Length: 503
Image 1 (tube, one colour):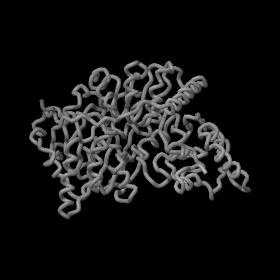
Image 2 (cartoon, helix red, strand yellow):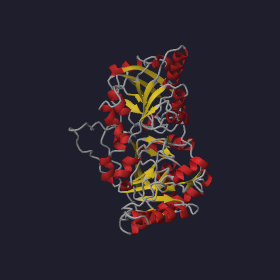
Image 3 (cartoon, one colour):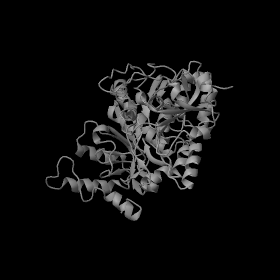
Image 4 (cartoon, helix red, strand yellow):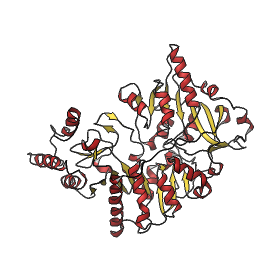
């Protein structure tokens, strides 16, 4: 049965190809999706076919692409492979797009996810010509029921000149009511406080609003979200998780965290974060809360086991098994999960008020605690900063996690100086590798360097790092943060020249 219960929208049902015809060369196109969930399924591939045909006939056709964060790999790939994207913002994780960006064939703007809505409203990227947004249904009154992510969809629907809706009947109808769409944000000087004081609070409505006059096409689909596959935690991930859980126990004993429920948790995407969350059930915790961007498989298990009472996010980043678990038990999970717009899930005011424990991944950290989470060897973008800065800058605890080495031991994740800084030492409190945990709170730079090397660096690299610090500190007038400027990037230079950071 059709999920479109409003006659005005039902009259606009068309094919994906006809919907794609609403997009013109040079348009700025905003699409739904966050970590694959809720990505448009058929209109973007149809647009790619159209772009390919136009370019094959000798005419230029590119678009500027705005998203919530990453979208499904196949969706981004079909546009990147044909050089259909002129500019991309704010976060990507698809290898073809990454290569185009690093080769200078696609412009890329990497910003904090909490900044996207405001910058788009302010016109930093020009006008948004078209929004392609997946929903799970349209009510009789013309309200839009969100699907498995919210991301920036509220903003796209508000600002776009033309709107294409994909109504996906694969999304369980029982998911309706899981969403909390807040319409109270405003630009300065008209802002008011975000009245959210508990993770489970609801401050908005369960549906999107849209001007029917702006909707130029409605396409019906029945296609599942792409799964965010995870591998089983390896020994390194489990060791990192163990250090984090020991640290939580230490903080509870010190009286800095509540004994049973800690504080609301935020964790980035990936196997390390999944392993940390998965280990919480061994700590004896109950009624934990999560205030994050995405919900992964481990969170579903914690909710089902009663370890987590409520989880708030903007998207569901689940594996195939996780998707099945969610859809088979949607009535249960709807009472324990709230999906919000990312301008609320990542809002600095809310993150600070709730006292979030922020746990995010990194590529590397230097001996003083500066973190590079985006650029390989300082120049080649990996994915983007995403929301890690929103939580690191404003959380109660800011933790960055990584294996101590990469590329089979050829790369150290602890280096003398990071060649690209995403999170300065002022926003980084704790570093964790499988080797150990470095608590940097209250430490001067000289003391910080010793703790980072001794507790986080791999034993193969510790002598090199200690030697660097000793020689730097021995220089006259070396200053507050000792460095050998001629050698600060020697690890990276050595890897570029020889394929290993080791001599």
